[in-house]
Image (cartoon, rainbow, N blue to C red; front, side, top):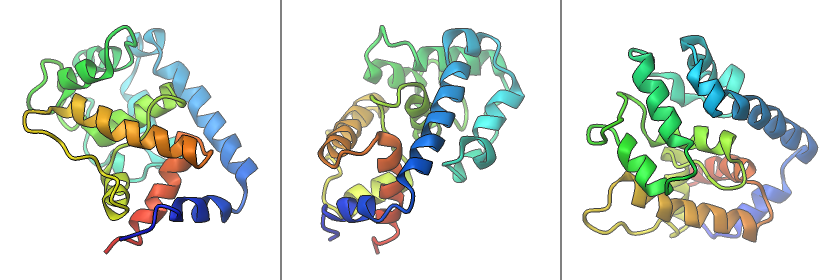
Length: 188
């Protein structure tokens, strides 16, 4: 079991907090515009493949493996649903759940959807991927899912933990994502 205080240790050992904050600002401001209603309406294959590349998102290396651009109209509809804050997040993600949701796009799962949420709404939504899940499990903080919960309710539960940790340790959700990746590497 990894002590939760490891988050604070990794926070305190961040080499350049200012560089990290500038990078976060650059990425969230740029991609926040791309993932706006107007941006999504004109989203190109190059835009989405750009976001999925580490060179442009500066954070997630593994999300570019599968192509999500086979049906751009469907992708635009899915992303418009994802960012629609007039609907509860659980409802939006249930509609996008791979293999089940009415707006699902092949290969567009939580590891791609949650970073889009983070760059669009950096103070509201954290990243749920293999690293963050492994870190939360390693610290004993991964929520238990009830039978019948779909992606949306599961993400709500995970995001509650992420938002709480970010507040508790006074880090942004972007910074927490970096820290949780480091914590995940300690988990056996």
